[in-house]
Image (cartoon, rainbow, N blue to C red):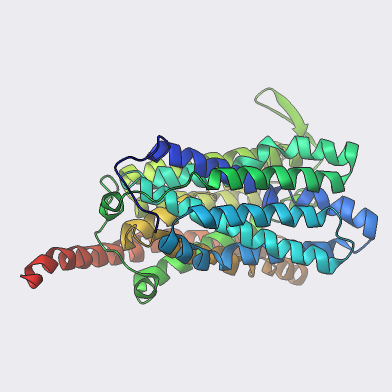
Amino acid sequence: MESTTENRPLYASPWWQLLIGVTCMVMIANYQYGWTLFVGPLDSKYHWGRASIQVAFTIFVLLETWLVPVEGYLVDRFGPRWVTVVGGVLCGIAWAINSWADSLAWLYFAAALAGIGAGGVYGTCIGNAVKWFPGRRGLAAGLTAAGFGAGSALTIIPIANMIKNAGYEQTFLVFGLLQGAVVVVLGFLLLTPPASMMAAPAKVAPGAGRAQATWTEMIRTPVFWVMYVMFVLMAAGGLMATAQLAPIAKDFKVADVPVSLIGLTLPALTFALTIDRVLNGLCRPFFGWVSDNIGRENTMFIAFALEGLGIFALYKFGSDPVFFVILSGLVFFAWGEIYSLFPATVTDTFGAKYATTNTGLMYTAKGTASLLVPLANVLTTTTGSWQAVFLTAAGMNIVAAVMALALLKPMRSAYTSRATEAVKAQPKLAT
């Protein structure tokens, strides 16, 4: 663990560390959200087929999520600096390889490197945020996650233009090296907060305890697995609806219908996808901030129920192009908050000392949920309509909302009370 001294540099403060973390997240956002721009050009050149090319994306998501606990363990043990630096190097190398990859094997290898690198950066920055802000963990995690959720919005147009004018190969190389270099430089500025800050329970959010549980202690508690199931339900339910937005729009016959809102006129699908990037980022700090003030479970219930109702409403009224845009925006707004609420809740419950490892374990639920997403295609093929997909996705979200109040809230309250009493009793036992 990196040492903490009284003579710390200027950037060794919560807001500077948060800004560094958010910037790193912006730099890795394109590895997930910008990938779709390269699929067509790759297929046009090599004719591998879109399905085969998208296997690379699946590899990226799985390694980006399921290895985060290992990377988090290294952060909790040795500090955030080197995990982030190595992650930036791997991300840069990955897109450099993509610039000349002439086989699917090389494309998959690069995807694996990018997944390992991006997962290391993501897990480190989220874990560092909740450690530096014991009283505003929801807001800190939300702002950091927003960098990943909305960060690609800053570079999508430049990337698309470079692909058009200079080819996807040069775009991979230039943006890969640029993004990786920024992460490497900023990685050297990331620091572990003082031990006194990590030992402090959240001062604002109700339900925070004084436990400092290791990952092995955490996974032995029922409250962790309740949260894990809720995360999977929310992630899978939202992904089932949002990942299929383009074919849904085409089947609803609204994809190319012009929609005029807030002074803009765009095809309905383009409008919806644009709103996705914005609202998917804004919702993370917003709901994180709300949870700092009214409690994690209460916020979960509101957001998760809103997501379920939004998905159902999109199914019922989405054939109208205006409603399609508005309701898809609602769905995106009520979904992305899981990436701020769950890290904050895990840290409140199990402590900040091992937060990077523990939040990383919870983040693997995203990878688990991604394995359920193909169920949407199975349901659509079997039933011949989108009804089962929408109802399943909405049902998952409503179940998660009910679980937040009926299961998680009382279980977490009981656990944090026991942990706090155990901590208070330790000095007495020692004397």
